[in-house]
Amino acid sequence: MLRYPLFQHAYFVNSIDDACHKWHETLGAGPFVTARHHKTDRFLYRGEPIEADVSYAFGYLGDLMLQFIEQHDDKPSIYREMYSKGEEGFHHIGTLVPVADFQVEKQRFVSMGFPVACELYADRVDAAYLDTRPVTGGFTEIHGDPPHILEAFARWRRAHETWDGTGTLITG
Image 1 (tube, rainbow, N blue to C red):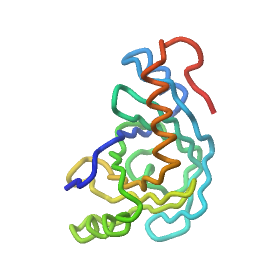
Image 2: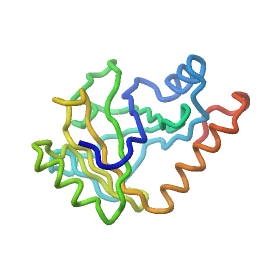
Image 3: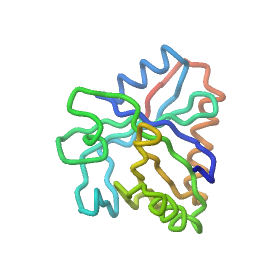
Image 4: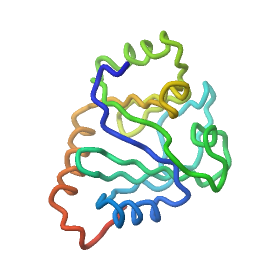
């Protein structure tokens, strides 16, 4: 099903800070960069302009990017579709798609019967979440790969590769 490399596992959590600490202490993940109360330029949830108040943490564990998501309100969202307040767990896998192929790849998933649950534009990049839960147990995010995003991801990965596990675990 995936035409492009899988790069991310994402988890819905009650606290991004707690998740960063637990994953670091247990598995050595980190350091993490946060985007607290993230805002987008354009956001649609199930075709409606509903944007929940969410914060994200990003870090690496080996070659795998981890994303932790915390929702601060009770608005309908792709997160609340899977988890009620107080619950947490695996949410989605992510794949990077060349910018020129983004719309074609999104339509390919839709043609296979996986509806678009959410689409957004933020930080000069498109992303879409396809409802692949019947197959994967979670959503599948397709994320554009413009140079500034690839550079940020590479910087976060280098930080993990060169980090000795001491100092600041969470920034942002």
